[in-house]
Length: 104
Image (cartoon, rainbow, N blue to C red):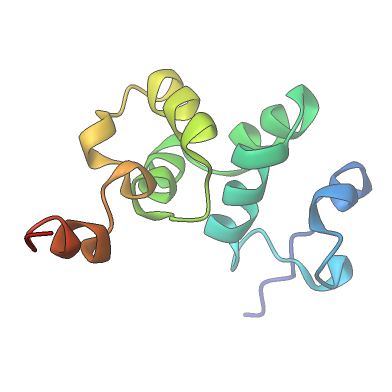
């Protein structure tokens, strides 16, 4: 049984200017699509996202993604009730953590 591609609506095309929008598939690329909408989406984009992506997957995406700005990550962690300590992009990078151990 072949599952057909589920495409985002044309109204979201502006958020995916750097990829082939016609090849985006919500079934296969949920984290990528969610990250873009978390960072840049408007109210309609967010409504669409919550309609097509289960909340648990949105929480997982926020927890794992490093492609979200701190400002957006703080907002979404509040909205999704995720402790900021569990949001990857808000954690100190391992490189910065290592450099803090060296004496200057």
